[in-house]
Amino acid sequence: MKRPTTSGKTPSSKTPSIVVALGVVSLLTDMSSEMIYPLLPAFLTQVLGASPAALGLIEGIAESTSALLKVASGSFADRMPRRKPLVLLGYGIASIVRPLVAFAQSWPFVLLIRFTDRVGKGIRSAPRDALLADATDPRNRGAAYGLHRALDHTGAVIGPLSASCCLLVLGLEYRQIFLVAAAPAFFAMLVLIFFVRETKRPATQLAAGPGLNWRTLRQDWRILPRELKTLFVAIFFFTLGNSSDAFLILRLNDAGVPPAASAMAWAALHVVKVGATWAGGRLSDQVGAARMLIWGWLWYAVIFTAYGLAKDPGTIISLFLLYGIHFGFAEPSERAIVAAMAPVELRGTAFGLFYFITGLAALPASLLFGWLFQVFGVAVAFSVGGALALTACLIVWISLIENKKKRVET
Image (cartoon, rainbow, N blue to C red; front, side, top):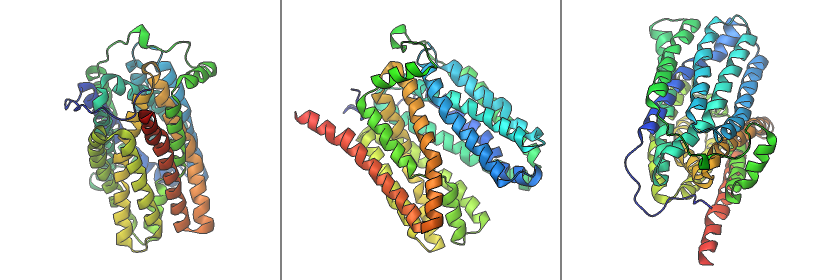
């Protein structure tokens, strides 16, 4: 079994250039996406006359498509000598179609654009994370994934601020801003084409059998270590309690925080994520990814529960920002554990399953939270989310830490 934590050796401080390049690609892509996404609900309802139900249908189909494709693309990438072509295809599809929303005259066209955009995301995500694992020293993977996630979150800060500047300072209309969003996506493709260089993998590191069929996926699932499958169970429980961030913003609004302040808090949350993921990834290489993940989920449980119980708007805003710290503990650690545990020939499949499980749990998570919120109130809804996070902590503790201690003792 591959270790979920790092060795006692000192990690190399040198970050591979491919990690930086892929991080810049994610920054520019997220900048492009986040210039459009925050404006999309208003564009759909105010300009195109779509109903809230249509908005829900668009986002539901988009995210479900992405989750399903991540498994298939990860499996296919394990059977290719190079993963970059799939990464390039995924980013390319999204970069080309996303700005086309500027030409939409009805909401079904936006549905088609969002669907195709998420197809691109589904194709690229698992091969990209596997490519990062292939290129990184195992002792330095937490830092690599932390840097990548930090740059990704940086794009999520710059994007909305750029859209606001275009809207409020330059006086551009929605459609014009959507076209401007094509620029960072174009530069992302240039970085990916010219600066992401991949070494061809030997035949011994390629998965057996044809990709993209359920029989092969079942065979690959049987090969994956039991501890990795248990981690997926824990991630499912955690995600089940991690509802849409829209409920966090709704909590701000219900507490009397005005929309303008909520938007500023949302941007500040992403700034917190940037610092937390960069520092958290490096720390996970020192203390162990499994322990770091538990700390992150414990932090989430405490902050999430307190967020539902707090009454003062200032306290709620503070908790909202503190909530962002758990991303630094958890996001790099989750990916480092998956990369460490998965057989080298099945890294893409493992990351595809990781993304699929989080996507699978996301829909019932929001439905459950919304029902609890409506029937029992905000405090109960957030407390249940915290309890599910504690359950996930217990699963990881028993399966990855206590069981390891017992094996060492025997």
